[in-house]
Length: 206
Length: 206
Image 1 (tube, rainbow over the protein chains, first blue to last red):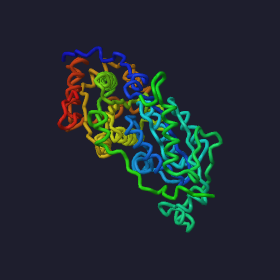
Image 2 (image 1 turned 180 degrees about the vertical axis):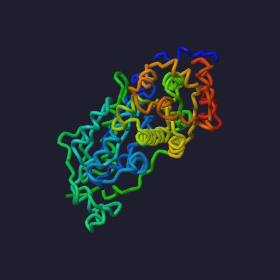
Image 3 (image 1 turned 90 degrees about the vertical axis):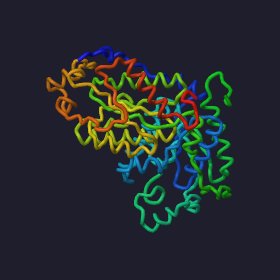
Image 4 (image 1 turned 45 degrees about the vertical axis):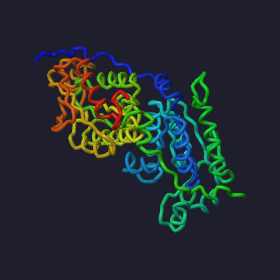
């Protein structure tokens, strides 16, 4: 047999992060949303994604729908399983950031230690965004009726009811979603992204 | 407290796949490389990534370096752990494809059943690419000295030596990397991608 490809072991080089950023016109990185159920994570994540996409940004949302039914389908909601779920999401977010994406993660992520690990996993910019609203407000909204179920004991380990939420002590951005409207919250987020993900020497609208 | 955001439960819509494809100028999907250690997976994945990036495609490689040290850092190489590793990679590849990327996975992925599950996880186009070279050729190349270690019994469960490799029966593309040079293999891969990831009604170079 003729073996032509004796040079198959040539060291191949990855496309650099900077080359990806230039192609996209912005930096990649992680926007890590944290907050109680009902604090607005999913709504704001998708509205922000749509706005950024329309401005030509490369952006993607990781949320319960596309993670809990796939990558983390084997995990429940016990403390250990939540930690493993958040660990995996942190690693996947780091991959998306490395690929040049602005990745928005929309998970309660109640434990400080787990969020710190997600930050460590991301080599690229990582921004912890606390969507802050008091439990009473979130419970009143109860968009999917989950608080009611949790109060009736039909959901175990429900954050705020039967499981703890450790609010971030030093978020990179805090948005009071009890006082601000969706549009006001979105404006803050969009400004923040424009500022943090702009390439050096380029207009934020570039 | 004034609660302004009573409309926080507004149903938000994701950016559609088609909108992402239009923004990128090509479809997203998975190129799933399979083959023995030394068959050329890593070299060809990175060379293909570079070539596609230079043509303006959005492309990313998942390989042992960025997965085994992160997302799958908790997994070894037993059959069960390999299956779980490939399951996770299949789910992450599906997310990248959903985000509009051409994602190339460069893993031995020796089990037919696991590759089938990866195909099922991907809603977007999934292409199984067999980088085919006889064991003797791969073992002679032995780019990282792994076969030697495996023969000495220093690595357990090494595919081709002490663990099985189930060659694909129906790959979407087979490249004989024992006979073809790296450049010849790359040319085949590039043509294949141009054909399979072009948007309908657009020139493949679009």
